[in-house]
Image (cartoon, rainbow, N blue to C red; front, side, top):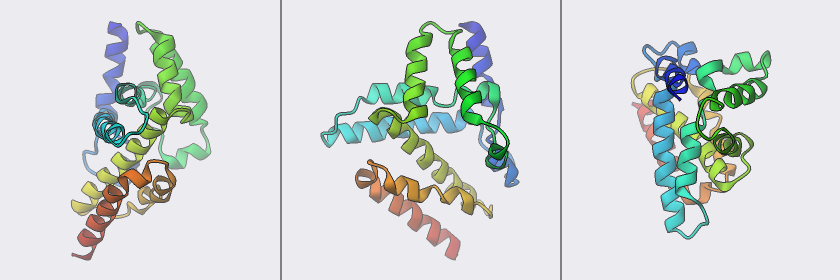
Length: 185
């Protein structure tokens, strides 16, 4: 397991490529993003459960913790590169190989697949939290004066189509309002 733990340390060193391409000085690492995604997932899952939905918050958080592990090997491939690289294939192989180093490779791989394939409510919730986290980060960078982040906000319609949107519509509306206020200043 030590080899796995050391390799996963790459996530702390690797910066999110989309932010680098926008010229953001000292952008967040993949680990920074993954941590906040896991925290967001925890809160959203607990709220959904409180509202009576059948969701397993512990499973959702486990998925969130695993959702970007493949990037320890394939890095955070930026959007323009996806025209030339099959990230899905690469990520599936990287995750399968990485998780072989751990104590429960099949279980952890199945959890990761729930996110990758969006095959369970927990996997879909992590996908929602992942995109929500990216928008929060975009808002933070825009608040620091960074421009040209419009392409990141194009994910908003996808979030509005999510089964979770009715439960968290207020969060997304507030995020958009905050962005509008900061842009008008």
